[in-house]
Image (cartoon, rainbow over all chains, first blue to last red):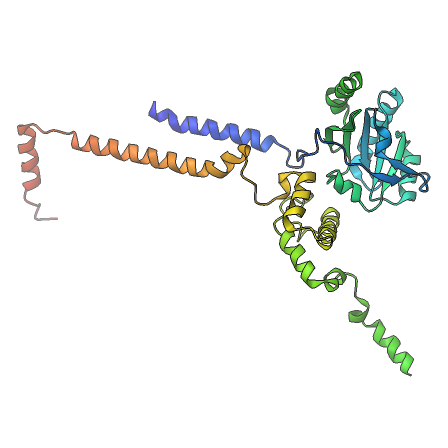
Length: 174
Length: 155
């Protein structure tokens, strides 16, 4: 039996390394899950004189998608958002993060606009409130204004089908 | 002539360079306090750099946030709590003691104790094994004969 101990120790170590090295270090679990979404009032992208307030969204399930024209992964995510917006399942609100208005507008003209409305967070202050550290990030917010899920990085067809849409359906039924 | 001189002086790089160090000049005491705090906080973009040394845009914004919170009179602990509430314990270089970090904090000591226990067990077993050998009288005589054998003169 004794001569099997090194083998057992090796297997235990291998399992720990397999699990540990398989984790994505860029996915930091957000402490904001199941907490009220931080309230904000920000100017709208197309008409900066008008404001958008997160309080207006009470009673609706919605997605808050943080994006920017300078963000590379957003380009990859964009077609997925376009397809989602055409299905009319859930409203997608955009937060143009640390961007210039003309750049943001040009980007949406070029790739299409999947958003019900876009607010601009020019200095990134609301981003800090939401714990944004890598764009794109997407929050699923329920009718009571509570964050239920945070997608770090680009939304893919898989994450949409497996996580986001089932959650949205569940929250809308409540 | 005087104006020309002023123009020339203002063209010297040391006079025209004022962008980077501005924050520091505003309030060196506050800046030092911010740096001390930020050295123990992790930048979320380039994860092994501290918030104080990172050049990432987010780190720059967070440093500004920390400065402003200090100006508002928040204590270091309040600022740390604020950042943890937004980004989680991950921002701390020094992870707090919690139910799920017990293994992290005490795991190495547990392994050390386990190793020591194994070592003691092995040594005891070896000692017992060594003292267990009992020689019969015949074997004892042979051993004595071998040990008392005169040395080969040639070696």
